[in-house]
Length: 289
Ligand SMILES: [Zn+2]
Image (tube, rainbow, N blue to C red):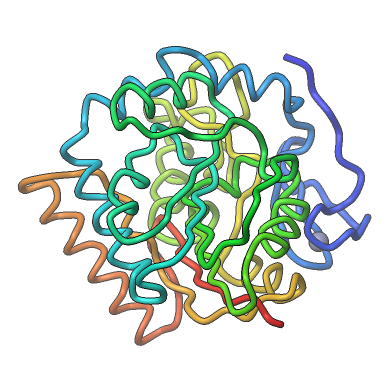
């Protein structure tokens, strides 16, 4: 695996970095951003995501994922009910399939295998590439990044491009894992301490070591907290209008009831204590003119 080292914080440009875990997790002393350093090069990651079996698990739980995407679409429609929408890192196109009933929806994706599935399964043409290099012929009213920002190598340029592509007053919706605070990382830290299961190799922050050998289903280059993400957006010409949790679970039946209740409980805690203890973050931001 080819690795690269980062010398400055991608979110704020500061070179005041400190290693907070075993020389593989860095934190910016200025803005608090936590990221993997060193990390695999982008070419390595691109080929990882284009493996033909990468999306098999998604296809095995289509019904559960349909519920998930409909749930997220309902949340998007609280802010915009129609218009031009771009879904960045759209995967196999399941969200676009539902969103196109209300929006003129387009999607982009780096994974060849995901694009092929989107065409075969949903008859959706997804544009291949990175948001920074694709030229769209019009701007958008909504841009969504569902669990994408933690994967991109350069969140700053992604955000700058999102801003360019949004109409004035346009809405940006970002969902990312809440990797370092809350219930999930606390449980993982416990399992890691007692060397239980696959978590035995996780560090004291509850984060996995980056590997492209299939031992991890996803590669997270960034580990955001709600406040770091909010600060990042505000420095990039956005005003945050909602900072809450993303009901990210793909579940049905009794499993869904459990997740619904957990999500509700965490929403309640957020309302009272203003802390997001849930496994995910959902941020809605408006482009400032
Ligand atoms: Zn920083």
